[in-house]
Length: 594
Image (cartoon, rainbow, N blue to C red; front, side):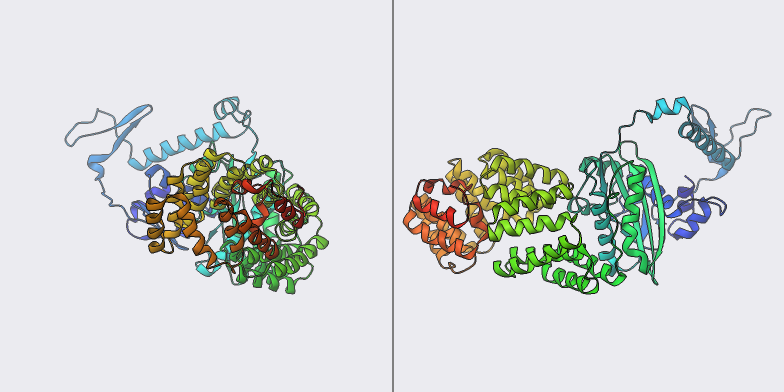
């Protein structure tokens, strides 16, 4: 209330954060003013139904303070003093109305102070000590333990957009450290990043992410100094459980996230990160590492790999820098920047370096296992490393996702679905994991549920429909719904060539299903020398009942070490050739059991 009065009394003017702190807290009171101001502003916005992005009441002036932007009307004291009585709504004394003899209306300020004091004292009485009424009213004794947490993106208070990588990187490090606890479910980065600068009420965010608690905070870096604030909030009651501020000079920043995670783990009586000791690296290596993570998440994989290489060169003893480099190289292979041979040679070297330096580095094991499964077909070694990665990083959706790739490759679709559901539970806001659960369910022949998740993915990222429509088309094909299958297949083509899509639809309407795919095959054959194109050509020949033409292209895909051919055992469209001896020979070439 005091903050609202202050802002409204300065209507239209900037009220700085130091001014707010001075107004609300005396110098003798020890309090984290950064957290206090953030919390007060957030709760005012919640009560006023205000939006930080399009404010009607309170406008944020980044790095400086706040401005009250709504119209303010001042009501004269002589006509607008509220009479406040316990349990009774305030009653205004009209102009000319006589007051009772001997009674004087209390001055407005003293009434407000009295009401506020009563509220504060009542709150203190209920929320401190061992008061039995507080325990009953607040259910403090019966509150369930915190079993899940979301780490919201740290707010960049540096006043410099170029420091976003630093704020996001420190957020990632907090998530990584907390996620080492197998008893605590930690929501992945992809899901929490959608709430960056969202300014939504924390209970609403917690419900959307299905977590018990939320960690929020801010960070700033200037003149060689870093200031970070964190506060842990219980979602169901919007209660502050813990808060802390950290001030460090530049050289001590590398261990800051680990220190914060340890404090949170202690507050939660959790084992989070307690088994590991943060690596003491140089500030320069740490900064390069944060930039590598930042660009890896943005899918600028070449730039990411370059920064990870810089981190490695500045600190050749840092396991995390090597595992980050391995992950970036894996992504370069997926995007076709590196050949399969280069991906294997460079990626495995980096992963092995990471494991040699830290045998507890789960990311390194998962990346190594994914490379062995996708490009080398070393199935036994791949599963050992992938399972080791999950055990060391129990909250990593990527570790689960990589294991799913292996499970589908070796024709264990039911297990693949189970682990893909686990990945999505850890990262419910991920477009990739929603889409991949859809394709995993397709491989498991659970077509209707597959459609549900693919449509959810389409709603999340409407600009990425071309990554979804092909899967939807194949599902409708397996359900015998050819009109729908053609509709979605041609829609995937329309995004890049509307004339070709129109031509194909005309052929389907005039000549039917087989003619449509014969025409599609002509377009595919025109690109037969591109990586992985032979696999799609082979599958289409199977669809057309031309197995003799399909197998040469399957063999070319195997020669290329195309990632698509990895799922040949589980792909429904390949069912028509499974009895053919040439199919068994393909599996033998891929070291797969038949």
